[in-house]
Length: 185
Length: 88
Image 1 (cartoon, each protein chain N blue to C red):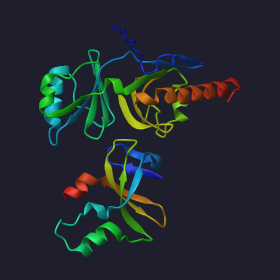
Image 2: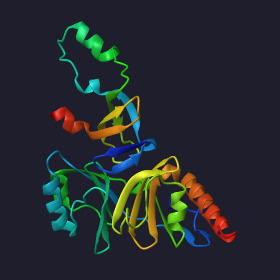
Image 3: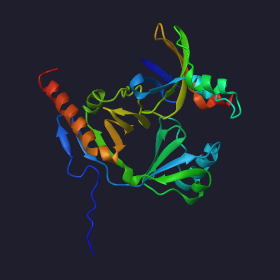
């Protein structure tokens, strides 16, 4: 029997560390897309409360309960992260396992916002992006889902095939921000 | 240019793709005369002033929007979900 080697999307690319910022990869965890059927959002939200203690998230929000999270991920769609969906959810929602489809990186540190400001066309300041936010936007030219649980931590999800480009782009911005800080702005 | 996405809030135009005039929301019936289909497929106004277009928020929430903007001043005056506009 061949021994298959499990590799995470950013295997060998991270960690990357500069003054004030650190880029790592999140531990592999299930990611399930939950798309309520037409008019069933409330029923799906009830089933999520029953099964996971989580609501169906309003646009732009992220919720966590007992190690399982749910993030808004687009119009009438959310990602359940860290668990497989409760069976009742399949009644009123389209479910798909996307665990293998995403590269999930974590950027944290005091310079994290300054780094992302070079790549992302939306405001990630605390007033515009409070703790518990989820944003669909661009990272450079890549579509991304950004999760902000709080503090100086931003989680960047990009399509798995773009992991290397994403790490390259973020690492380059990290280097530039650190260089700018080193010469006193 | 900022487009006020009803789902995401104001977002930079680089997150969007423009499809063209919102006339495509009003598809003729299958048995409509050839003139109606010709107009639907090929004939477009070229307005200097207010216009309604379909934009796709492809790098955001993925919603289709009907965006109202002015081709002379570049002012964007509104955006609504295309699904809601079409359902009316």
